Amino acid sequence: MCGIVGCVGRDDAQDVIIKGLKSLEYRGYDSAGIAMHNGDYINRTRAKGKLMNLEQKLAKDPLIGKNGIGHTRWATHGPPSEKNAHPHSIGGVSIVHNGIIENYLELRDQLKSMGLDIYSDTDSELIAHLVNIEVKKTGELASAVKNVIPQLEGAFAVLVLSEKHPDEMIAFTNGPPLLVGFAEESFIIASDLLAIMPYTNKVTYLSEGEIIYINKTNYKFFNNDLKEIQKNIETVDWSDELVEKSGYSHFMLKEIFEQPRSMAKSLEPYIDVDNHSITMPELEKHADFFKSVEQVYIIACGTSFYSGMVGEYLIEKIAGVSCKVDIASEFRYREPKLIKNSLVILISQSGETADTLAALRLAKEQGVKTMTLCNVQHSSMDRESDIQTYMNAGVEIGVASTKAFICSLSVLNVFSGFLAKVKGNFEKSEEEKLVKALLATPSHMESVLTYDKFFADAAERLKSYKGFLYMGRGVHFPIALEGALKLKELAYMHAEGYAAGEMKHGPLALIDEQMAVVMLAPQDDLYEKTISNLETAKARGGQVISIGTIQDKKLKELSINFLSLPEVDWNINPFLAVIPLQLLSFHVANALGHDVDQPRNLAKSVTVE
Ligand code: G6P
Image 1 (cartoon, helix red, strand yellow):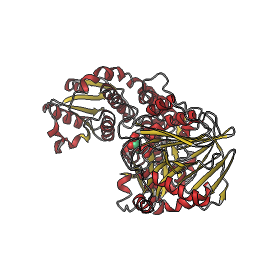
Image 2 (tube, rainbow, N blue to C red; image 1 turned 180 degrees about the vertical axis):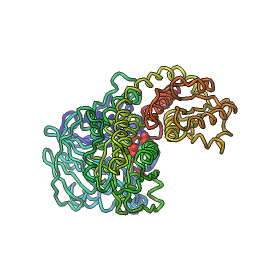
Image 3 (cartoon, rainbow, N blue to C red; image 1 turned 90 degrees about the vertical axis):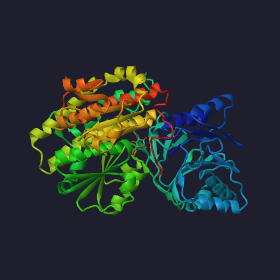
Image 4 (tube, rainbow, N blue to C red; image 1 turned 90 degrees about the horizontal axis):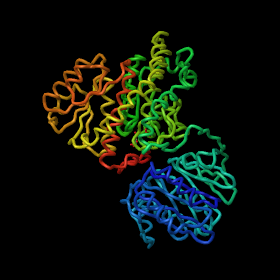
């Protein structure tokens, strides 16, 4: 993970880098640092903890210069500390690194045997040593980097500053995202568009094995062999992507409240509102393939995995096609045997999650068509897949995913309809029903958001439970899992999601008066069964908070709190049921005094295994 930013040729370089790091803090936030070339020397400031600590140091003692590099860290090798914070500076060379150097132990031994001192516990410092050795040998930054890259194994995106080369900067990647923004007579290089957006919309994404070398106002792209290559500069449209809290206390709360609008936007490209029909032109190009698909695999991590689990129900019930869902980190190592005529769908907000990306590559190796459902366009997965679909959720900053989840659900609904249609399994009336139901969903979501006040008031009580069990059946089982994940991520409380029918096989033993049981029981075809599960939990003293369909007297009687949802079709229920669970986690975590937008030990984009 980690976020890196470089700036070349600007008087306000320090501010550009710090502002950029702020927007990348979601990638890691356990320490941060910056190094600036003042024309003669490189000066560096680093601080443990949030970026604010670095800012405080810089406010007292700013760094001067037009060229600099910065880093916000998510620790992999070595605990969070100032000595392990980037940039790492050795001799006249300073670097920032995002990724993991897998052969770091060998490199460390090699450098030590040369009599060199290693100052940190990180793998990244070794890159600075290697570049420094090569700069001394070759006298040139670009040649130095060319000689270093083959020595590194693993995933790395690196920015390099050299004291002897005051006008130059070099950046290279072997996997992790890296893009260059072309502003007026200056350049900003970063892990994410967010750091570049305020200055320019002209960008180039570096692909694996590519280098950019900048010298004052000139730049060149190279491959790893230092052969010059040509790359296009793209103009990115981000008019929607205003990254502000807009009056909300937290990004997460803002993103929860944005969900009705995001859901509507996610549908826009895929629905013909006038005809109430599904239109997926990019997918229609592969109509013959989709017609022949016999098996769908959905692969993802975290919250995206849970949206995939909902997708399994949608694809099987709506399209009538067999679907299997896998956690990417399991899939990639279990030697999966993918059948011919299958489609692998990779779901990822960031499009960069290392395990999901590896799963995509594995599926391609097996000759199976891959389709991505990403939020970040131009991300690695988006670029590498055969067919692309998008969540269209806009920028999501809160580490715990909310609106991207909702938008995945909406695209999975549309895709299930599309698949049903190409396979001839969908009557026009069914298509219209699905489309109308989806179009009506945002306004139902608005009404569920009014539970914000309930959870804000109830948080003090809820935070005193020893744990939470989330139960649901059918399409609500993944929602129960997502609810439990959110509470773990944000409130650091014990929470489990269970298929309600499994309660008697273990979780019942956990239930007593100290245990909150969140029961998802909308009136669908599993309702009666869910009610029996609820009675069982209540009889054991469980403190039941139920979420069900409007005016359900039975559910109300059985629960200490009953939250009602509008009556909708089974496939729409998850959009509504997840909202109270997001609000619950947000308010409990807030009441416990936790940093909701940046929970401890986590990061939004997990680009390491
Ligand atoms: C991290 C984030 C989660 C996210 C998961 C998968 O764990 O904290 O919010 O669901 O990664 O991320 P992806 O970008 O692949 O959806």
